[in-house]
Length: 271
Image (cartoon, rainbow, N blue to C red; front, side, top):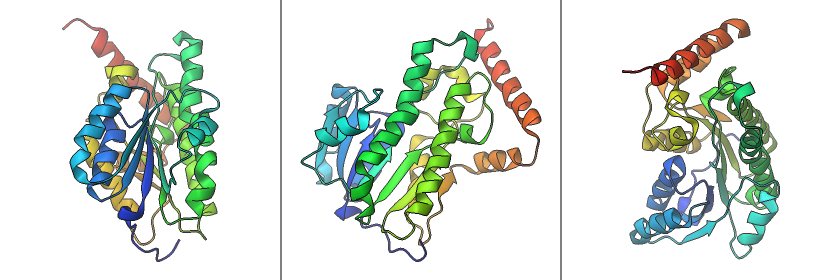
């Protein structure tokens, strides 16, 4: 991975999952501005159409695919849906979180969370990895600062993101003798629709970054001559994830759990 040449975005066709809003839509905007062609995948066809219209003036080709990826065979299904496109780069951004004690969670919702965040991400990566390794593009998987710690009230979400981080860093090493750049991106709380699904207390009361700041930080890491296997976006987030390595897991679970419980309590209390 040493001394890689800069990414030529104008030669890329980038497939982005979860592209209808939030970080996925912001990746689409930033990459279109750099000249990359796009294949945008999400459940909501109307949102995809709006984003395609927004990007119409950039001069890049934008293909949209409305598909629910929370299914076990998402990889082969998506590969078949883009059979006419040569995908050179992939951003696995689709995912969601749940935010309540595990024993109170809906079992089907939890399984959908694991399916989308883990099973589909792995399946989609496997479906495209051969052509990615044959080119000079990139693979970005969205992890989270939640990957670095136990996450009471978000136990399943944090565990799925720990999987994504470990999986992606391993692929970074496996891809070292190819032209493929591999990067796990771990944002903290970000101003996206994530909290409409997970609940406002899912940020633990921490300050949220803007989606464009997260994407800019990810692309800066990607463009380095020797890109790292993973990046935590935001200075405070980097400090917090680093500090977590210096304390016991017991202490870390207690601190995070207390913050999450307080955040949930503050939202349920009358003003």
